[in-house]
Amino acid sequence: MKKLSFLLFLGLVLRLLLSIQFYSGDINNHISWGVDILVNGPSGIYDKEFYFRYGTLTPNYPPLILLFFTIVAALYNLFFNLSWWLNENIGLFPSNIIFLFQNPNLLPAFFKLPAILADIGIAYFIYKFSRQFIKSEKWSLIASSLVLFNPAFFYNSSLWGQVEAVPTFFVLATFYSLLYSKKSSIASLLFILALLSKQNAVVFAPIFAIIFIKKFGLKSTIKDLLVSLIFFWLVFFPFGDKNHLFFPFVTYWNKILVNSVSDYVTYHAFNIWILFVGNERVHDSTTFLLNLSYQLSGYILFGIVLLFTLWRVYKEKVDAFLSIYSITLVSFASFLFLTRLHERHFEPTLPFLLLVTLKKKLLPIFIFVSIFHFINLYHDWWAPRVDLLTLLLSDTNIIKIMVGITLTSFVFLAITFFKPQKSV
Image 1 (cartoon, rainbow, N blue to C red):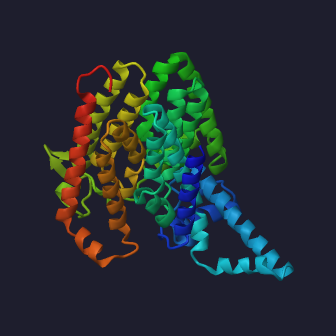
Image 2 (image 1 turned 45 degrees about the horizontal axis):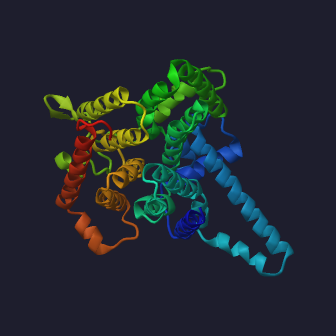
Image 3 (image 1 turned 60 degrees about the vertical axis):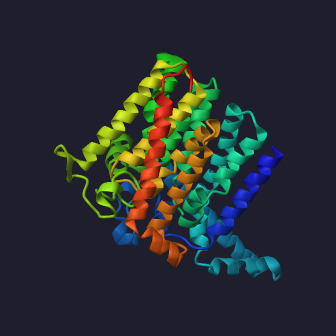
């Protein structure tokens, strides 16, 4: 564990150093949400007109991540006030800390902390899963390092400031608890935390439900479902209309789950639709094939993968690696085939893909897909700007080639998964 702790520490230091270099304008949304809740309280946050107040988006993330932003805002104020106190009362080195707050990147860096800490948590659970799958300390440390020092992870959390790592962490923790613990309530509450941190965790719900029922039975499932719904409602309670009993569920559906800032076929995501529309902003209601829209076609393709995967999981006994493999395919397929996705929505696939390719001795697939995802992230933001890379990645044909290779990798993994055998 000493080696793992050292790696986790290095990964944390790397991210903290990167966090103060620059940031995306998207993080201004997170700052406005956290500061507004800290000052005015959480009630009615989803109904406020943030654009007219702050020039940012009205919150479209679930309440747990908003709570994290509020804690970060309070933490920043605490450090700022402490620095002023030191400056006014101690005429030695500590008083100079106040000058750190003149750095315009410091406040955004604080708001990257939830994703940074989640990255470290992801690396920890990758180590834990790897120890179960391959029983090798060396390869488990390598697997953890492939998260800690992988730009596909730290570029998103430490530089850009996006929060995909947070639900990914909770999903990993959920399935580790589900597969290796006998306490059903822990797994169910962890999954609710994933749903409450970001809505894209919902794609994992069908597999979670099947494995949960198979392992713990229908009676326990109903009990834990009721407890989870109450927990969900209680977390949501401070953020909405307290006169409307079902407002948490209505708000989650209307203002979080189906509320998208885009109705385009792809919103910077390098998925299968790039092969047909390139980087053009085509509305997903546009007819694609057989008089079906792009959106409906995406649902059909994803639905086929989901149904066949669920059937395989349902037929087999509960098996940890089979479960992780099925999660990988469903998450992978959701990115490849669904419309309206952003580039960063591919991140939750990567930890599970790492576990599958590590176990199956197919790590080159993970390495390529990581590079592919990093390029997709960089292509949207271009920071730091490297002219040669910008020129190369502005060529749609190069992007289509990468998408083709990634799609081929998915098909290969799917064939391997569904090939008749006693166990995966």
